[in-house]
Length: 260
Image (cartoon, rainbow, N blue to C red; front, top):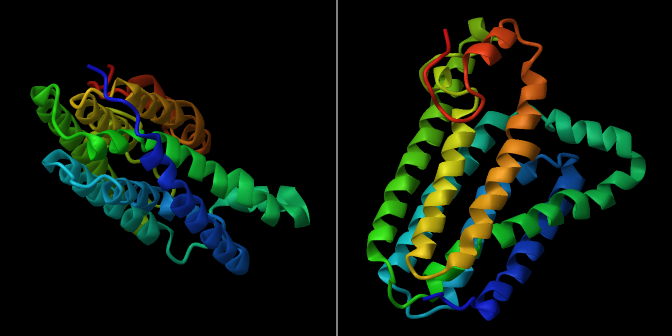
């Protein structure tokens, strides 16, 4: 059994996503800081989940649970990024784009930064359409597996972020490379946890028969590995002492024991 895609509910989220991001863009233009979009990444998915839940009454237990899971993940991520970026000004990536783009960059950033991320949020949020629309589970055991997978991914991401934050909080570690905790098993354990978490969302969605939700973890995995995650961060980390050795000894993504 394949759950039909609820186009009407999915489309209902578009005005909220793009309207909210347009307002956020206006704020970013006023304060000259486009990196506030990073804080909105998680909450954007929460907006989608809430809209889908609102348009899909009555909501099943798994529908409510999905909204709760998205809220826990989104709020933690937004707080983590917000606290990390507080008082540091615009992220160097966006600052460079602003400098290279000239006077017209502010307007272009509405499309290339804010609306582009809005499209990604909207597309990747499709598992939440499934859990909101489904009245029963086709594969109940798969929903339980998905919940366990989500929990593993969330804990991996949250613990990795916490460990790195603690390391950076010590002034003596400025400019140094953190290779302890979960970071001794993967150079990007937080991104790995994020990836696993989205496969958990997918499994919960598939338990309703929504095989089409596969697009969400596939796109998210691609983004984390090839676009805004591992590839981008590796470029900035190579200047730190000991990084080349770290690369030789530690997997980039999948956690495993350090090579001798």
